Length: 206
Image (cartoon, rainbow, N blue to C red; front, side, top):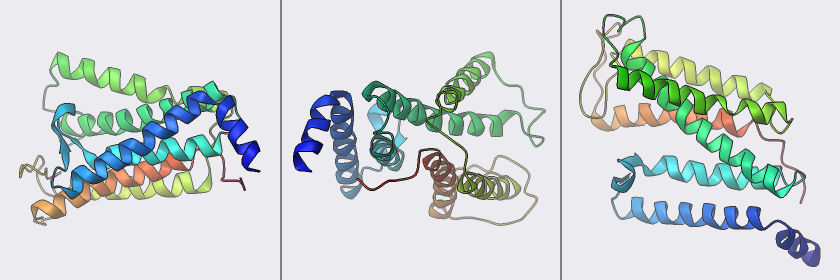
């Protein structure tokens, strides 16, 4: 069994490199967060938990897609990771400009251009459905449903930001602390993330 696994790693160099990089990314971000650095300044203050999620997504994809070719597996996890990041960013930008709460707010051309690019990158995941690598499952819809419920709640309480701003008129009058707002923000992203994880084939015995 060990020889078979070793041969598999040698024959799948892209998967091996991607797996090592994913583990290093997770380890680096855990150390950063433990030392009090939650945001990555070099990446324009990306939350470190998002990078950890990307690392685990890559590892899960490499395991569940091991029946695919080396290039197919690695390209699929790359597409899934990019799609996960940019679909949330697109929804977030939509929330600032295009919801019924904000239709009177003009979206600047540069913001609209960025929104179109985000939607386009997120849509690349359709290639993985077309190739049969990804499928929708019962849990995909459950996690997406929870994401929608949590996100709607966030908008109904005024779409508060971790900076302290409240973007909408409150339909439900609730005041959140900074960390409660942060948890709500991370919670919505986690629901979307879990939905993405369900797209991979089920785990099989190695």
